[in-house]
Length: 231
Image (tube, rainbow, N blue to C red; front, top):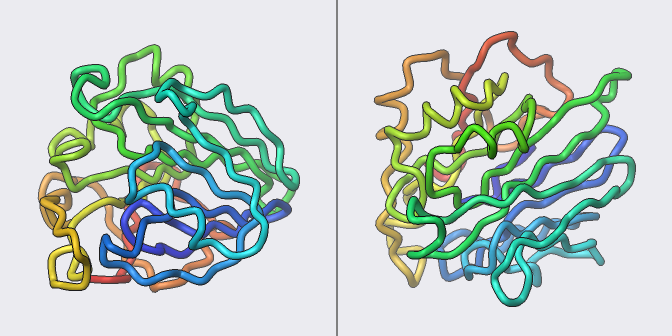
């Protein structure tokens, strides 16, 4: 797995496709990744999540929302991995502020004969209701926004973690030197990772820029695995 910046990751699924999540427009401040993928998921159609043109190759694009802003019915199999989307909101007022958002759930082989479930929360803007958590189901690796303002506030993220009980939490969508240091043309008022880490009381592991998380043994209880990239 590699963090490409903001809410975008490159995930090389064992026995499955190369998957890129929510590629951001370069105006956010992160460089064009120049990566090739088999499938791209887009949680919603904001400029900092839908720059599909920045991904090389001819990926299959799975969009979580319809052109009119409704939730898309996403059920797809790509290269042995199963993709689906669960409808959630971009804000705590059921989309009245920022619209809807799709929570992507991906199940793929772990390279050792088992299966592993990944969840990418996109711009989740609220604590999950029990029915939403049930629709998402069990999660091994959760990619979740922690920077607040447009999404969950850092203090709310532990409640989402408690609802899903993932084995690994990968923070995303927080302020870095790229979003707040003059690289981007659009300054984003989101909090740095340290705000979330101040309220997270569990184990923390730092990852290098490109970590073989997909093939790594996962902990039995929840840990946060954060990338050093862009700090």
